[in-house]
Length: 114
Image (cartoon, rainbow, N blue to C red; front, side, top):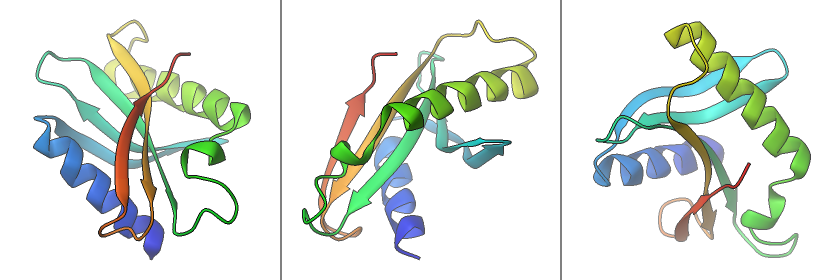
């Protein structure tokens, strides 16, 4: 349930930034996007949420691998085609990290360069 708590906190944070939450846990064969939001300017944002209760195995940001980034990119393209019929809409990928407990750990929004 901790993953769901982290995703709920991340979604609330992103909505607080003025984004519209379009979908949670978009799944496709071989990949998933935790949150899909739309910024007020219309840009779609595909978000991976990562939480680490302790730093014993590294930070939440350090848990995002190149393989995960590739899967996110593929899932984002799938979403664009399935939901909008095209893959050339303005969009970007990001990771929301929470280091510590889901309810009050340090939350950061990290844009990704892909």
